[in-house]
Amino acid sequence: MIDWARVAELREEIGAEDFGEIVDLFLTEVDGAIDLLAENAGNREIVAEQMHFLKGASLNLGFSALAGLCRDGEKAAMSGNPDLVTADALRETFAAARGVFERDFPQRFAA
Image 1 (cartoon, helix red, strand yellow):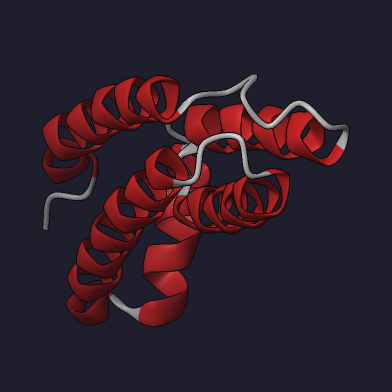
Image 2 (cartoon, helix red, strand yellow):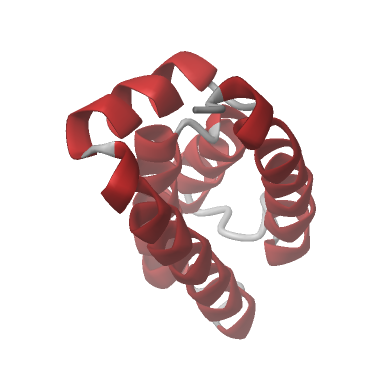
């Protein structure tokens, strides 16, 4: 669900001090993108665009399960089936991944 090696790599790249800001921005942007998807369900172009954005952002922060779901949604939208992966499915996966991240991050990266 979480690629902890990627999390560690990103934290190392940007520094522990700035990492929290990146996480907060990611969480806010994911919520906004999922809301946009829900508002535009069935719109092939917007769904593909938002799935692509979410896939990249999720991969960058190590949310691998969410990235995989977004990859599937992007491919489906580009193939003419923008409703295959729903905003509700993304919300569920994101909520589960976020819960794991918030629970396990402090233990994995304790000072």
